[in-house]
Amino acid sequence: MAIAADRYDLLPPAYADPIEAWFRLDTHWQLAACEWRDWPRSYAR
View 1 (cartoon, one colour):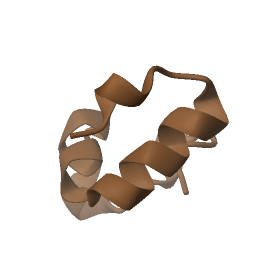
View 2: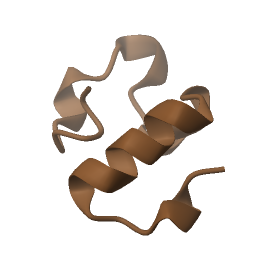
View 3: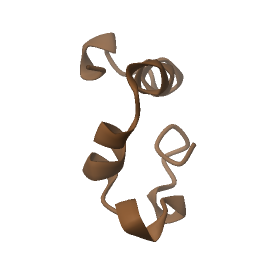
View 4: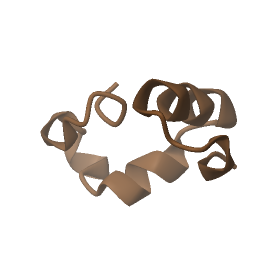
């Protein structure tokens, strides 16, 4: 997962903007990324 790995260069061309890619994820994946990156869980929907 490009967002969790901090590798935005690996995002697909259709969603190259990290913000746009983030909102395409469902809550489960957002929470997983938050946990991996040590971000607050409140960042997920």
